[in-house]
Image 1 (cartoon, rainbow, N blue to C red):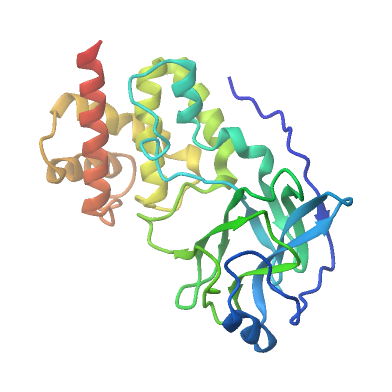
Image 2 (spheres, rainbow, N blue to C red; image 1 turned 90 degrees about the vertical axis):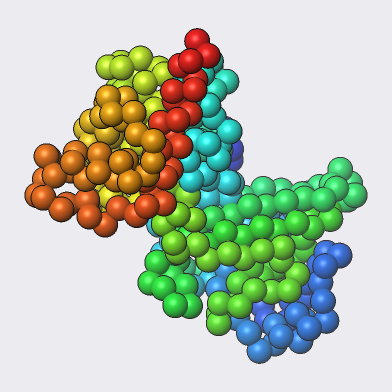
Length: 304
């Protein structure tokens, strides 16, 4: 069921150098950015590299002194709802959505070294000259006031970029030309880590074999939530599936009407498997999300 055949052509360039005096291209370049670049260094930037007279490759460059565990030039999601997947829908189209970012996993880079560039796309001087081009880039890195965050960059330019294109300055400020540079450090805002994608797909297939497609989606959605919110502890993704299964079963048995009952269910499950109070850190927001999943699951079963 899981297709990990990669089609995207990955390329890396080492020892890329940030040029302070490089000119910004694109319709949104501002004079203030041009002046600021003499004084600032970009932590991350895009760089266009000529392939021939007509085409440029676009590289994301890690200009820090740290290795990035992964760089995702696509949109990862927080949950199956955000991915527009439906509980109870066993169609192949829905299963592809349940897998979240499976269609773009060939674009994922791991262990991006300092001063290394990774190819994330290309632009054509003729075919793309009048088109608005967009790049969505996600990566883990520290923030101005946090030791860990996921950064989300949204770049939109007409006809691509030319030369160096800063994404984030060394003081963590956002260049004025970029659409957004968001530092996601709250668990509720973070997408599911793309680094656990293959582990997640393997778990999904095991759940399907044990519970059927519909129930497997429900348990997987609960496991996603336990992972995102670090319920109980920071366990590997595939090691909380037993708790997710028990929570799913108790939800169906107790038919909760509010998040407080859901919280009691989660804590009871974790108390059984671990020490009492092991899941005391679960937030009410997480419980409300679980309640919404349960309600959506029941609604989908009533339609059958």
